[in-house]
Image 1 (tube, rainbow, N blue to C red):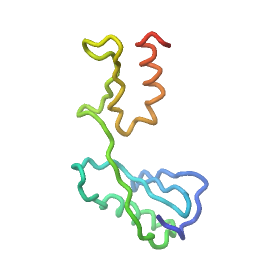
Image 2: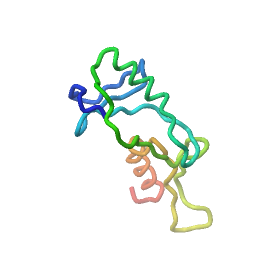
Image 3: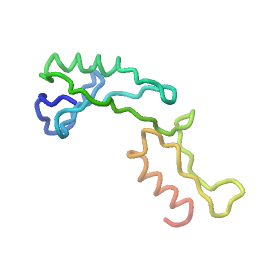
Length: 121
C-alpha cells in the first residue's frame, strides 16, 4: 500500500511493467500477475518489485507502508479448464468448480451454461 501516491480515478493496466495500480483506502495498491507456487510458500515478490520500480519512472509512489503482503491460492485444475456437468453415477449431483483466477469473469456464463445443462435455464 502506498499512502502518498496520487489518487487514480480508475485502475490502470501498465502492460510494460505488468502491474495494475488501483486507488483504495488508504492509498494505492498494486496487483501483478500470477505466480504458481507451492502451498504455504513464502511469496516471491520479485515481479511486484520490478513493476513498482517501473511505475516510479512516471508516478511518485512514496514509500510502501509496512503491512502484510496479500497473496492467496486459487483452486484450478492442471489443464486450467473448469469442471461443469453431471457427476458420474449421480442423478442429482452436479459439478461446477475449478475456475481458478477466472471465477469472476467466467462465473456468470458458467452458471448459465450449467443451468442449461440441468434443464433449469
